[in-house]
Image 1 (cartoon, one colour):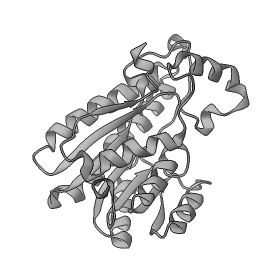
Image 2 (cartoon, helix red, strand yellow):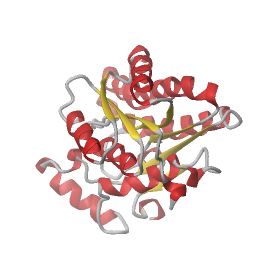
Image 3 (cartoon, rainbow, N blue to C red):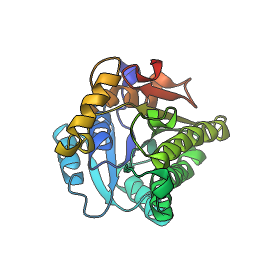
Length: 254
């Protein structure tokens, strides 16, 4: 269906070198977009992302920087537009996760999590909107987490949960600020997903619990984040803004 196509559009994807960000970047290209993939300097996966997109017959560039640095993002958006054309779609997927008991968590661990997962999303949206707003056109999708709405059993990650809750409300707040200026802003909140982080041997027993607690009985595949992202980025979601789309296999129902 043409309403879901992104032909001729330029998309900027943060965290495009691995996991959900990488798969969504490739998925947007499958829907017809050209992709500017942004990740940390030295990212081992960003080259593979670009190669996969070029094999689809779409244009792709790799951009290096840190989402906690406004200047890096501004420069990258400028480079993306020079190489690929006006930015119309942005997916903000860069993020980290770790765990520690709340009463023992060092301040720098708390701050680092919020700097990347929340401030990084804000700075990304800000840089993207600065070129979209004058044109009165754009779709931004932020990757949050079901952990922004629930507290995961047995995982001591108060900083992660807080950061993702912030992403959800940031998304809604930006959506309302820009609702009459041509930009839609939505979030996707994945449940437990088979990313490299969750495929490490040391978390194998934890993964069994994740699967048992999910009503659908398994973790999501990264492929299953592509459809929601393409939908929210495309004209199919032209009347959708300020939404936190749960993609969690029914987890929050229980």
